[in-house]
Length: 352
Image (cartoon, rainbow, N blue to C red; front, top):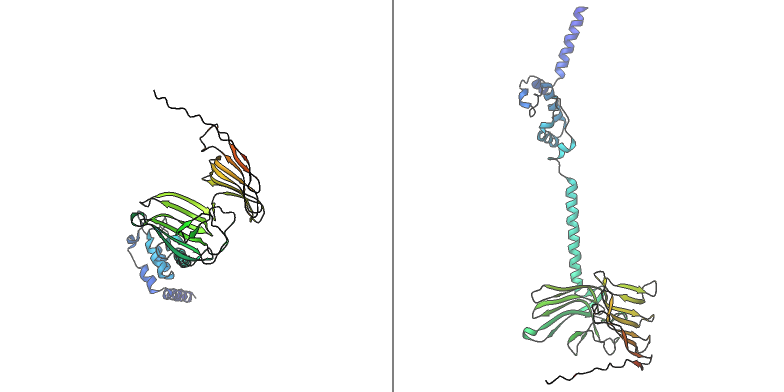
């Protein structure tokens, strides 16, 4: 019986020895653990080395190189094998797919933006704000006094807004861009400015901006002969971009008044309108103070006449000035009041 037990034990030992892989047995015979020490820490034991070798066999090659790159973190303070974190394994070996996706998306967005700008440039030659335009050139003077203009006009006539006071068009007879009131504002022969505008003095750009149905629109800039910016302004279809506009109706089609605002202050031309669209009053503000002459109008539908002309101070600094009425008219244009001219005393110069 005892002999049988001894035979069974020997047979079991031989069987277990056969299951161990040659690599593991070879590693078990290694006697140089000092070559795998951590920085300043205790040497790694042979058993820990075997575990490290088995871990490397299980992990794919990419993560194995990650372990090699962080070999100083594989063991803990006691010399026991410690599994590295995911960030340590992927910091140098695995690509940042999120970053590449962001870069690809950025390139696509840039490409789309470039296409959009190219399309706008192509359309700018024949279209502005969805309205067909025609490119034109104008030249005035010669030599050092040469003035050149590059602008666009409507292909087909459209009636400008009745609320816009400064209305620009090209006068073919006078060979000039003007805002003078034409004899018949609605006649189809009038070439109304619409689109980009540039003005050159002796080859140097001095003014540029945009028009919308004859009214200033968008950003306008003025330069000197050295192309230094002198002035800039922003417009929205004939009105200062920051202007406060009140309407008679909720659909915002009938303007009641336009209060000019520049850099947060009331400054510029003020306009009020009758409900029928006719101008009711206009004048200028300077830092919230009325200045110069203000004119009121009757709401005539056929031919509009002035109602009252009032004089205010020349500028905001003139103190103690009392506004006064210069003239008044009835609805038919007949003057009903005129302020008497002040008598002036002219003193003769003393000959002595």
